[in-house]
Length: 236
Length: 232
Ligand SMILES: Nc1ncnc2c1ncn2[C@@H]1O[C@H](COP(=O)(O)OP(=O)(O)OP(=O)(O)O)[C@@H](O)[C@H]1O
Ligand SMILES: [Mg+2]
Image 1 (cartoon, protein in one colour):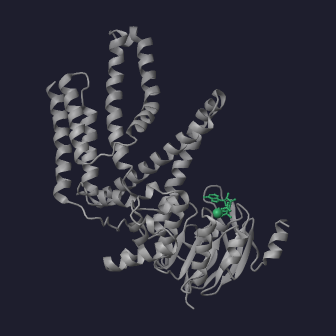
Image 2 (cartoon, chains in turn red, orange):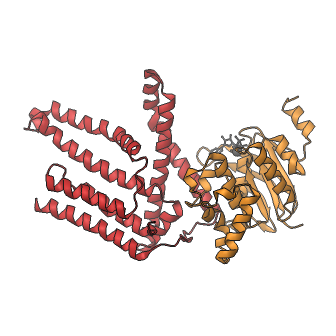
């Protein structure tokens, strides 16, 4: 039903929508309207897949909340020295960051994780940038994708294997030591596979037919949304 | 009979980080068109032998594939003649759709869309997964992913097939199909790492036994192997 959007269209619009989200202002009505309507229009154009979004939001919250809770507790405890506002006011800043981070991460995770390595490469390789920058960008995105896949797997394993308090505690203590090598090794293995299958120079292009007009509409919407957020932020 | 000859002479491989020796004086010779299985317990070095062949490890000694010594300069040419199945099939799937991924090696040969489509359907039906043609790769089961990766490795009938535990995720029916496909393949030299004795005997003309990174026997019979592993 929806025309195919080019990989580049997806990547660029996701980047701009994320920037828009990060600049959004959930504390004012206008800011909230811009953020939510921008998100809605864009997700309609890109044919955003809402299945599983709930689960992803919960996972992102699990990752983000402890961090911001710490920030808030610290601020609250040291409020005499660092801040003059009430506890509620102190809560405001971390929650704005949480809102922005949540939306931006969700947009990224859901769209980019559905793109294949070759689709991502095509997207980056078509950008008007110097080759060396594109190579670096491609490898960063490629590794971010691996990072996400491996992290989701580890979270699943934690859910299943940490059935009582003690084991959950021990697992969480061990996560940094387990997680990093796993992500690195996975990246290594999939790079090896790309080399052996002959995609070392990132020369294989995405073949699927895609509509360039529609892709441009998608990029344009992302741009408008980003511009609105930025302008509104500056005006305030 | 076509396919490439593969020779390992006194090959040693060390792990990069701590310089632990992984392969010790590995010697064997596989003639063109031969179908062999690398047998060995976990950690014996089967995967390392295969990945060294694909140029993924630095090595001492001599390796020849076809008539070419395995060097950095020849690597591209050698890799083009290898169909490789990785131990973790997921790592080698690079596209979102099954058809595109399987077609990768054909796409590089500038074949017409129609021909590519025909060939992909053919190999998918040989593996019994025609129904997955348009499927999204993320949504496949582990065994289905292994079959898609196999199809991608075998589709252009490469002169050398390196398969790392190809039957590990397959059900008995699919395993049978794969045995038939490998038996009927007259285009390739086949080197397959596996621990599945029944699978090996289904198509391989010779079994090489590895232990602790060395070749213990370069032609071991099923009976000797079972005795060695104390399976009887
Ligand atoms: N990347 C690596 N770095 C260091 N050591 C490694 C690496 N990969 C494998 N090894 C070591 O090399 C030895 C042989 O490993 P290899 O994967 O070749 O065994 P295998 O015979 O394929 O085992 P399995 O049947 O479990 O797949 C093992 O002892 C392993 O610890
Ligand atoms: Mg192995």
